[in-house]
Structure formats: C-alpha cells, structure tokens
Length: 404
Image 1: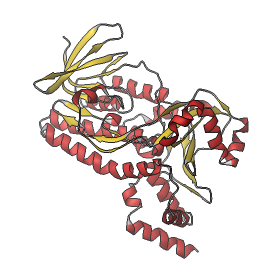
Image 2: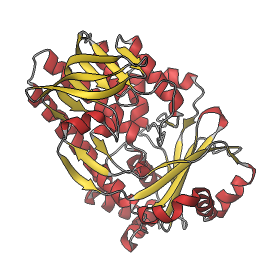
Image 3: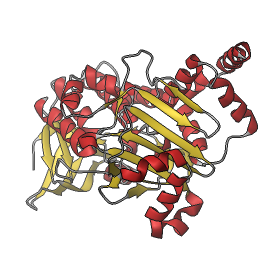
Image 4: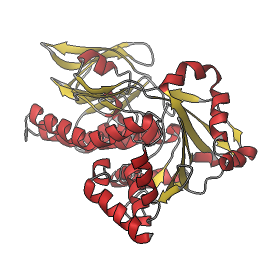
C-alpha cells in the first residue's frame, strides 16, 4: 500500500503535467503517472495557439520552449482558391503561436511538473481505478519494473486522452456527440521553408496546412472526409500527394522538399464528457474531444489544467464543495468550448462553403481588420460566437461595401 496523495493525475502530456504542476505549486501532494517514457511522441496537431503560449508564459515556461529552437509563427494564411485571408493570430503584434514537436513540448511539461514538486512515474501502466462505496479512491497498476502498485488520493484526475482508462472506469455522461468526420494525416518535411506562417489551403473535399517546427522541419497536416477513409488508407502517400497538387504553387515549393518520417494519422470522434463525479475529474481529451482541423487540442488542455487546478484548490481548502466547484468547471468549459466545437465539426465535413459564406469570405478579404478577426477566431483567440455574431458580420459587410 502506497502513501495517500491529494491528487493522482493519470496521463502526463499537455493536460496532465500542467494540472499536476499547478496543484503542486499550491503545495498539494500530487502523483502523476504515464505509461510512456519521456521524451516520446504522440499523434498531435502540435499548434500552441497564442492563448496557449500565453499560458506557458504565465507558468514561466515559454522561455524554455523558445530556448529549444522552436520557431515563432507570426501570421496565419487561409487560401480558399479565389482569395487568401492573412492576418495576425493574436490581439497584438507581439502575439505569436508555435508548432513544437511533442517529443520536446511534453518533456518540458513533465520536467516542470517534477520541478514543482509533483512525483512523476514514467512507464507506469494503470490497470484498475479503485472504488469505495461508489467513489473513486485511487489507482492500481504496474510500475516500470513490473511490480503491482496501489496508490490512493482524494481525487483521481484522468488526463489520459481519447482512450482514457479513468473515463472507461467511471463511464461519464456523453453529450453533443458527433461521429468521426475527417481522416487526417501528417508528417515532417525538410527543405520546405514557410517563413513564420501557419498556412492553410482549402479545396473541395480536401484541406491541408503547413507550419514550421523544430530542427528546420515543416509539419504538413491534411486530410479528406471520413467517407473516404477506408478507400484511401492503403495509399495515404499517394492521396496526400494528389491533395498537395491541388495547389500548384505549393506543389512547386515541394520540389526540393523531402519527407523525413512516416505518416501519422487519426480519425477522431467528437464529444463532451461530464468531467467530474465522486472522487474523479477529467481534463483535456479525456473530457472533451473534437476533430483536429482547428488545432485547438493544446489550447483546450492548458485551459482545462488551469481551471481544474483552481477549482480543486477551492475544494481542498474547503472554500467550496466538490460538486459546486467542479460544476462551475464544467459550465465554464462548455460555454467556452461549444462555439468552437460547432465550428470545428462544420469545417471537418470538408463541404464547400455555401454561397452566403463565400460572399462573407470575399467581404473579409477586403479589410485587414476583418482578416485579423477571422484568423484570431480560427486560432481560438476570439470565439466563433463573437466573430459570427450579427453585429460583427454586419460590420464586416459594411466595411467591404465602403472599401469597394
């Protein structure tokens, strides 16, 4: 029998390590476990949007990421064929995004959790979530050496992603559910400079994006509708190449580029989970998952970490009851996430925009302020609900008429 902790965090990547770090910085006894050893890779869109970069800065970790040589991204460009919308992803000229390799970002976060005082156990496989009278009270699993270990805590936090062992055990309510919509794949290329821009190219039933990452490499991620997954999965490279050829100027830039690793990919479901119950909490993809086309996963994970840690601090100090604090955590998460979720699910269908949306895109292209707003909405800096509000759309259309 191990010692008792205030919190056990299952999963040590972008949701788990920050949650553990923030709780440990408040003086709580935290154990974080992960079946992986770090550094190690995971399937990911990589993008640290400006709000996530701001979180790293608040935590004192942004300079550490910059020191790894991760290039900043100062602008986003959305190429729709007839026109391209280009703008800043943040509200100020200094707002930037990053596209770090997960072997580097995740290791940085794990080390930060340990430096804060959390106990980190890598290579630990959780086999059981322990209950007592219907309440989660701990975990049981195997250490890296193969020993069976049982640990107990006041709360167990599931930060273990799509195939969450914690979520599987507690069976949370699932809502706003959508099936997989998009088959997405990515790899890294050398010899393909993108000059500090996160560029996205949208064509009928196809879309891909490119961003600079570590070691002079460029990430290219793209895909097609889920209805084509079975037919295309046996020749991902061939279909990926045909997709890039839909943008001749980009295909020409690829002439001197070389793919450095095999393709990775995923086809993800879309859902919200109730993120708490007796003795348990869910953060990151374990609690809320959507298609990667808008690259919001790291943003969401960091936001969950901050809000979850703040809510649990209120619980541990007896300032609020567990249900009150975590109920607010759920309400705030859903209010923030639902507009982007709906926008993402619509985008992931890969259907061409209807005529009224094409008209709006044309109006946006006539104003730098409107283009900045569109980019910031895609970056998660402002909500789609705000951007697509009647008032804002009216202002965009009026500005376009004035410009013409």
